[in-house]
Image 1 (cartoon, rainbow over the protein chains, first blue to last red):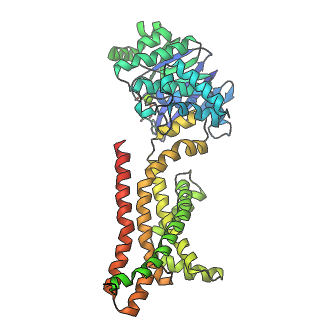
Image 2 (image 1 turned 90 degrees about the horizontal axis):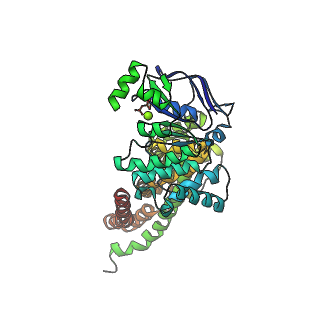
Image 3 (image 1 turned 90 degrees about the vertical axis):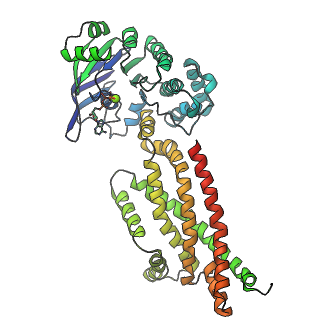
Length: 240
Length: 216
Ligand SMILES: Nc1ncnc2c1ncn2[C@@H]1O[C@H](COP(=O)(O)OP(=O)(O)OP(=O)(O)O)[C@@H](O)[C@H]1O
Ligand SMILES: [Mg+2]
């Protein structure tokens, strides 16, 4: 459902993604690993059009993503995105964070949007925080709200950019648990993460990126237990 | 005591105070919209609007307000071939002048919002406009409150210049009073007291607001 074809991204002289060819099928949980600066975030941002491709193409459900076309907002709404630093809207309550886009973009009325939001808050275990402000939540709670906010648009796939790396270690588990549930329900996900446990339990495929290229890919078992490329081996040796 | 100039000047000052406040508030009300439009234009993608906003801000910030006042009152009237009432020229001059400074306040506040906010908005499918309106602007507006309060104090003091086009604000009446009574010291002292009665509480209040915002 998401495809890239010879995707290249450069910031000025600096090429960050080189010739990325990727096909993500419905229900897949694709984990992306790689050293800092290898282009993982940029890849996710190209997938939902937050960055435009320098050359090559990104396709969503067979439709070409064009960041300048009027249809871009509707296409973005098909992909939920979860950020490392949550990026909750601090001037809104948790509930309002969840209902803003459904009301503005999908045109839901207040009652319907609220109902949807309450259901999602229940799912992520934060029903009692509906009227709290983001500033009064822990990091783990914030990230769960951010996931619920993205889900409120009923996206076809979810993109996660290091969703647990800004969290205190004891809060990582609660966020991963929500993501695991999602994976089991068949949500298509692309997850930039260094949580090997998560990748092994939920991941259907792992990509290793280095210097803007996909160097190696395979099942979690293949990639973690028997990496082929020396750079993958070196990287895994460092983080384990 | 009752025949002291300090007391006798009061009715004149009150008459002036009305005009001073009227011009400040109406000028700033118009100036805020002007400034918001110009400030938003300055953070929009490059184009004619953004260029025009930059020229406006630089021209106003680079010229003295007295020149701007005379320009609006005499220059504009002459150009348009109309007889602009002096109070209207005063309101326009404050609006145009404060608008340029408010544009910079708006631009600074909008640019100070974490880029992650815009990304979160766009990733949810909100358009650039919707993101500005529902995500960026409400947060930026809060940050504008202290500098806007500061601009209020500046514009309030700037209205004193309108005595040169005979608008009946505080300084105009003060000058009227002392040219008849030859008591400029008493009259001007009381005029300054009038300004301070507004500016000091305003800045105290502003500092409180600022502290409350920092405390959060
Ligand atoms: N807007 C930008 N302008 C210029 N350079 C950028 C921009 N965004 C990213 N880069 C550069 O692109 C490269 C890849 O960045 P990216 O954030 O995609 O890496 P990453 O793999 O996500 O790294 P990390 O693990 O640190 O998050 C980096 O060298 C970064 O400096
Ligand atoms: Mg990154």
